[in-house]
Length: 137
Image (cartoon, rainbow, N blue to C red; front, side, top):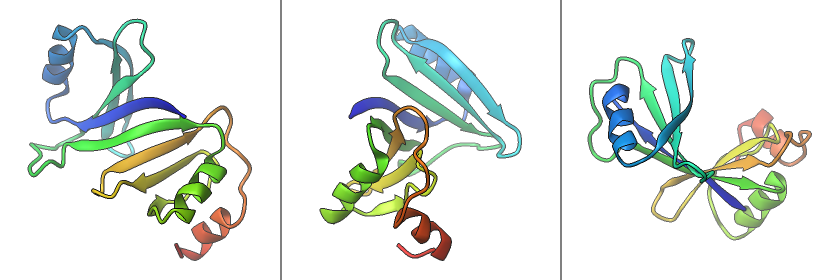
């Protein structure tokens, strides 16, 4: 498993990017999603693969109560095997890996952890695909 990024929701992306640049991080890529009305900005230190993902939800005027922290992300060799191992240990799978690419799980303190399949997405597989179709989990 490899740590990828941590996500923060931001209300003022320009000011937040400038803040992290003062700490030595550089902007690596940016993607606007007009349909979802959000922008993703990825920052990192030169020479380090780990990143901070800034998510700007258009029109958001500010976050309260810690809602600005989003999730941690890890790259895994086999998303199905990882989710099965976690499920067997009693971990809550919030979003099953129904697409063979991405899943979300929760820590005991309810912090979201994103799991991403290394390389190409795996073909849909049971029971994950079945759970996505029935809505059961």
